[in-house]
Length: 72
Image 1: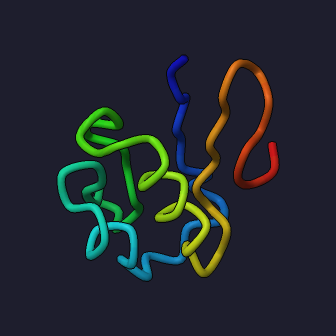
Image 2 (image 1 turned 90 degrees about the vertical axis):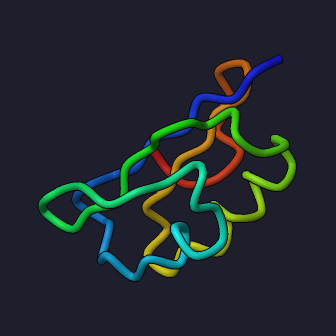
Image 3 (image 1 turned 45 degrees about the vertical axis):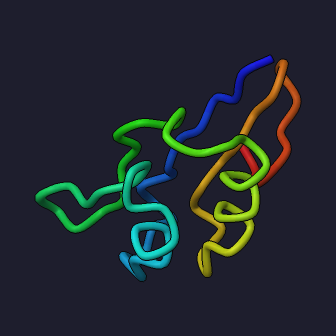
């Protein structure tokens, strides 16, 4: 079972909370948007909790085709 994690660039407000909470997973693009650099760098349950803390709900987490966090 693995997670698919992505960032909705249209929702990302560059709050950087994801980068603060999971710097091995997220970074900023040149445009200041969050991006995934290594979704396997932390346990899945922890990554789900980080996604839930995104203030703009820009992080989408999918497990086995089911959206766990966010909207598609």
